[in-house]
Image (cartoon, rainbow, N blue to C red):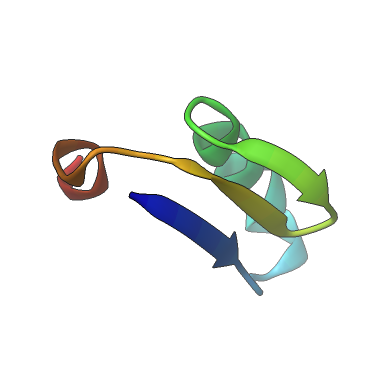
Length: 44
């Protein structure tokens, strides 16, 4: 399943979200990630 994630969080939490999303998705720009994930990975 292809997903595109865009987030808008307070500046002090940006690093936390970026680090989490980089484990499974490709980082395109500032707060945009995309990639293929399985339905099971979405639940995690």
